[in-house]
Image (cartoon, rainbow, N blue to C red; front, side, top):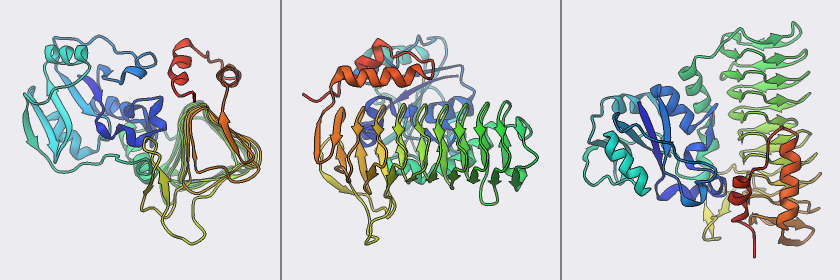
Length: 395
């Protein structure tokens, strides 16, 4: 089975996260959206139609013209009822709800033609009207459905329960709902409480002494939970992240750090970010009213309808010690925030944010910081990463 992901007009709703990645590369629960579909359908190959400015980082692969291909709207997650519909699709048919194409099944030759043109054409297909399925439409949907997606991903991948090294001085509450993969380490003094939801600890992850985890929680492959950390419900710590302090209902993508004390709530952190010691996010307004955020493209305020909303942070953004981020803060790609007061709630990409000032972050300095952080994880700052990120430099 071949899969190809496409984006619809709503992909802009997920900026700044989708400035540097396609929608299918967003992480919700344990896996990215693409990984969920690949696992659920046992796909032989994964392809995507991406925006022109992402092709260097997410290149297309050669489709097999002899096999059918499923074109999947990247905003949809593979819940069981949708998977049943997908498996029943024949070539030439597609599922649609209202104006939204969900999944189309086409022959390999047509799929190759769509890939070459860089755009699917659903007009010639037979439309099967379908009920509404779980999808994401706005940034805040990611953390709102994250706990449910942790549970669903565990059901999907059926992870190990007896792997890793677990200290005899660790406490596992409701151990039948705690999943620990091979190479993981749970040190003495940890409390893993799965009474209200499962806890997943990925391969080679480490939960250090005295950390407290309250499920649903996912700690992905190679991640580290620092000593004494408090990780609350509906939180995902992505691969190779290091996280300490207090975290609630938030998502870290991968290779990002929050190594020290400080609160992060109802937030989404991209890749290669670093939150300095005692960085704190507000996720609730003093008057308890709903949170408004700035829409990325229009730079106008929109109503989220959410009472709890913290920070969304694009890739490669860093904060200094004692940084304070206001409720509903949106940070772009590669920002350096070291203000001693609340910075603006909307921070454009490549911003150098000091006390009472926002100015452009010099490209060479930004790349130096990227290289230094990535080298610590034995990862190269490639030309394609530079090209992908330099598009957002302020002029």
